[in-house]
Length: 352
Ligand SMILES: Cc1ncc(C[n+]2csc(CCOP(=O)(O)OP(=O)(O)O)c2C)c(N)n1
Ligand SMILES: [Mg+2]
Image (cartoon, rainbow, N blue to C red; front, side, top):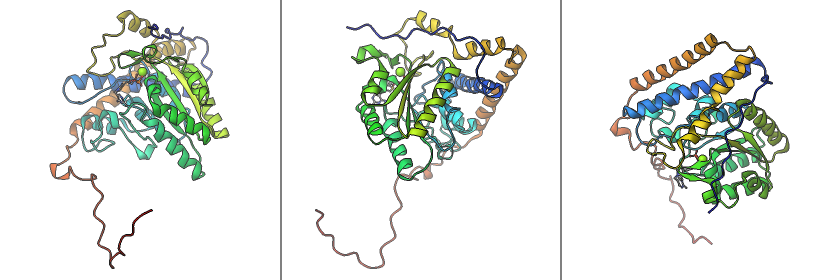
């Protein structure tokens, strides 16, 4: 058997951040908001406040933070069940997100979706998709609609490397290339699909080559470096917009927590996790900003406190939220019956 593929923890980048200072600090704030929100979610899960499945993004924040700031409001965004960070940074209010985690009516999916099905048409966030690879054909469909309606924008689809085992991945890349659709495929390669390392399930472990096989331009990026992610995605998004063709970006990253709250996490060495933690996207970026003189310890603590305060307000909002009344549970399940036609319809003829 082939040994599991492993992208080793990359060396943290140094040197000045090549971004405007407000944007550079904004990226840090984004990552902090996601991290603090999810740490609270883990705690709430333990307390039985959040139930069902819960897949945390902790460790991978640089991807959503760097990528979402490369997108425009008209772009369509899709993600997996590990999508809390994407939803938040897309603009779903943390209060609506937390209420959804609780299953409350004030949640962004009215409490019917939960952690894996965050959705917000107002921010062009199309989920929260629980099926591995499920968002890819949806992204292609959304991009096709944009193209046919001659509307600006692209569809950005975030998915894990486990999705490359799905037929839907290959169909989606093929159609996007064949029909020249504006899709930005963002593959978050965190090395594991539940407990399965990529090389245990795939003969071809070079994901960029897989994309190239479908004639989709590709690029591999250090997904622990928020700046690298942002710059790469900005350039790729511009290319997708101007050429009207898809692009594929492999973001090499790592999740610190287990796959979900049910996973005993027995398939990887603790030393591996610790090695990646030393390369944490938040602390390495914080160190870089400090070295540049753009951030002091007091400022960092203030930003962190602000993020924690937002989380507490979101929890208070969710706690005060309402459960859907039982008599309402059938709402939205069926299309209302059509009013009877004024005149009798002609007898049905056999269809060809
Ligand atoms: C079609 C399908 N098969 C299996 C599952 C069960 N499942 C849920 S998550 C997961 C692993 C996916 O891993 P990856 O795509 O790498 O994303 P990650 O969880 O690492 O973010 C599997 C197999 C599923 N949800 N959908
Ligand atoms: Mg994975």
